[in-house]
Image (cartoon, rainbow, N blue to C red; front, side):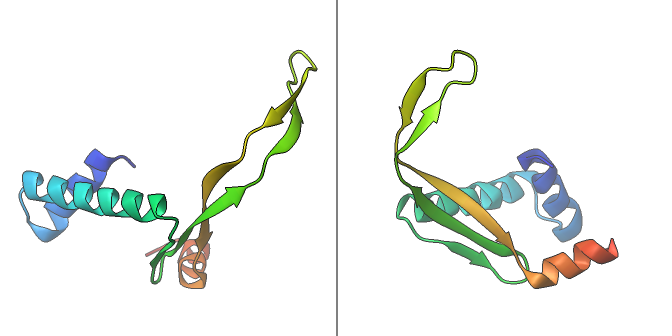
Length: 94
């Protein structure tokens, strides 16, 4: 599913114009991005939680050349699905 698919779903189910639906999606994603930049998590009840996790520097190896290298520290986003969503997925319907 793409952003355009989300816009279409909002357009069809709620009846907002496609422009309004697109603005809502953009505001949602911009807000989530800013929250991640600030290092905070985003919890969507009944869906799951997005967490920002810090990964430390570590030793790695280029599999192609075998050369040792250092992987720099970085932040990654992880997602933990809620039990409610797990249940819905397991049953195969919403």
